Image (cartoon, one colour):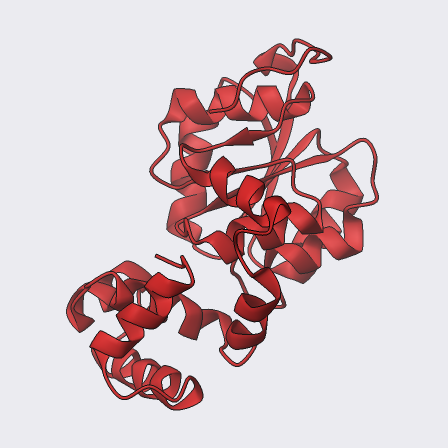
Length: 224
């Protein structure tokens, strides 16, 4: 996690109003259970449209925002309601890929944490972004610094990834990390046949011929 900023406002978690936005119901339930009794969870949403409606209706202090979900993902939510000065957005994702971190921060999120975060760490992250800090899981802050320093060629990464759907990006990263098709299917709650279809599509769109080439392609772009 990042160090507190000098202008940070201390926040009592018990006064914090939080909205949970994620397209997996089981994950939302788990997060809500972790936060129950510690912060005030004002509601949940499963896609961009329901997230926008929830934020506009409840005006939470912090929105815990998934990066990849139907309707355009977290960046689209930020495009539509990120102007609300009373609400801060904390990205929460299974992905720790550079382009996801950079993209959502550029869209307006105040921080980015991955889904292996513990309950107490999540509460701390929520209170800190509400108080003015920028909060990142370990190593992710480096992506943002590298992007501003020009170390990561973000434009080229974006151009390549624009060819892929959000689901194809998720499958691509897991395959590039060495996951078997069965493991990818379990991780993303889809069938093995669907994984095979996505992999074929990814290889075709990126003009690659094997998993080995895909791993090298992703590694060269710091996506894994």
